[in-house]
Amino acid sequence: MTPTGPVLVVTNLDDPTADLVIDELHGRGVPVVRFDSGDFPTTLSFTAYMTPRGIQGSLTTPSRTADLSRVRSMYYRRPSGFTFPHLDDQTARFAITQARYGLGGVLASLPDCLYVNHPHRIGDAEFKPAGLAAAVASGFRVPATLLTSDLDAARQFIRHYQSVIYKPLSTPLYRDENGVSCTVEVLEVSADEIDDSVAGTAHLFQHLVDKTADVRVTVIGDQIFCVRIDSALLDWRTDYDRLTYRVVHPPPGITEALRAYLAHFDLLFGAFDFAIDTVGQWWFLECNPSGQWAWMEPETGLPMVAAMADLLERKMM
Image (cartoon, rainbow, N blue to C red; front, side):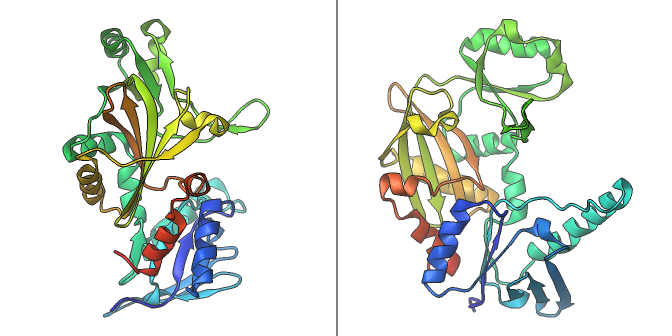
């Protein structure tokens, strides 16, 4: 039987995408409990019992209480990390671990809950090597890619393919000299720019697709939304003011590959990025299991917020 309790929305305070989905759910009369797991234990508490029917108990925020046995679905977005600033370093590390495996373990084990997406599956899919391997197995075209810490291998790869970009394997938050947050950009590199510092960690180099446009494909349950993004940018995410959008249909084989990729990681949502080359072929770049998407709805008129609310309400599977 499908639970008729609340939708849990797990994210940080500043999440406009989650705000839109919550407003849509509220308009439908669907109960929502929003919280940031990073608020535990200051303003968030829980009690969970292991029973023959699975986990029973409650989770309490300053304004809501959720019955853990009746959670309809969980929209797991971008919660902040656990912090215990009042504790010494060693004790804080212990407390963070207990919170992660305690509260985190409960949230990942709710009976009959529909996860969009399950936090463990998000973790699996965020590894770029795993994503690229799954993309190949799913039938996507994937640019030649090198992962290495070897200087010679990096230089040989760049000289062979000539047009090569460097991409971070993850996107940790940096702050510049003024304290402003920023991320490492995708940049084209030459063999001469690569030096012995490559040996300091892992790097990803990829053949640069000679592209005419980009495509963001957002899969929400059984619905697929394809938006062509035109710009003169190597990485369109660096300047949204220079982008134009157009709804397009996927070419043959893409829909099947999208389904295969999501099934590989057991995901219900994915934000896929593709580059379209000069002959119209789509090249897989990456899939973000927690990617942004709502900004495209007013640009295109696509009913994406309603689709996400349908999924979380469990109108579609």
